Image (cartoon, rainbow, N blue to C red):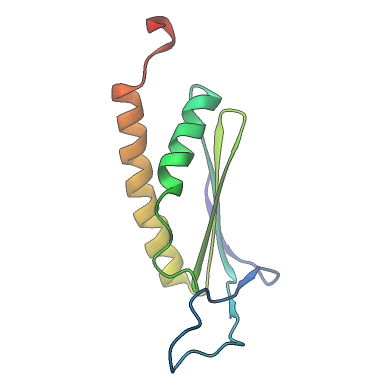
Length: 116
């Protein structure tokens, strides 16, 4: 079950790349828009494999979007926060495209329990 809510206590993110003439070293971007979800897999190993696969690619705009993935048991826990709803929607939509691909590849190529 997924929910998008504005969280007044949402974390803020320090910009990572502060080099360059127009950078403001003291800039902190609030991220009040939040998305949380979880997806259950057949095993903790499968959930961990998907998490590691999706963790390779960093967010394109880390100043505006924060993504956190974790595994609890057989569930992949997903958390996004963003500076605005449009950015959150774009980040989550792209992530879910990749999640679907990783899940289909896992189903197609991972050894099944009865194959071992």
